[in-house]
Image (cartoon, rainbow, N blue to C red):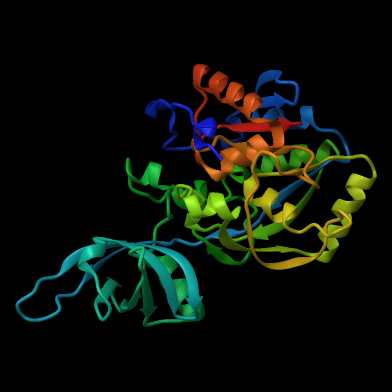
Length: 351
């Protein structure tokens, strides 16, 4: 597959560093299957859906996974160095896999201090430079320490331009996040849905359901040749309850739309379809990779943000709408100065 088909030039000034306030005031580009485009706002969403349609949200919670600390000197002749660590994946009650800087100066056995009484030991190092951290706390005590000492793990294209601050604790977390803090990136399409907008959606007869997928940093990683060849992405844990599956099957059987909010909700649904085309109860990892030529089986429309060029997520929206349609839509968005990526504006895709 030629990645150049999914490339586009984005002016750096269009990368949103903070969300608009309120977040439901973001712009919404409505893209129709025949290529028609409409400029609207996220708060206009109820006008484009019908009573009985159902929005499906990913209710995962983002953990404050960005840590600043110190690698203690290894001996009396050495010196302490500052370390930045981003937790990537929980591997045990007291262990996480992490990306860290300066990676080349870290090795197994090093002690990292992230706060008074809160530290970890590097117990392994991967070929890709990732490290495995064993903390001096586990379970809920570790979660509490991360909440006290960590910051929101902003995507690289924001973190390179500014540090996370207190406001990100609210703006980089959906208003409906559940009780499991396992994600290291937000399901960002859901950030637009303020309590006010959700009330207006309900008043319009549009239903809401939740699924859960714990988002990993792989969502921002460049595609690898091995992924293009295998047709599989990094694994992420997801869940669809039997009750949600049954209700969504009934929605579609009744002629109404199933509308995932965000690509994580879409990937959760599309990886939870049985041989008969019906949604089924699911719990466990998925590495589904949707690209042009793949048929989406339970997605009738999609609310999503604007995605990185040559990314698996841009390929996903091209699978839903067609590459030519999405390239034209993105060209329009750039010309009209829509705001891109995690804190940016949104699209409503109507095949």
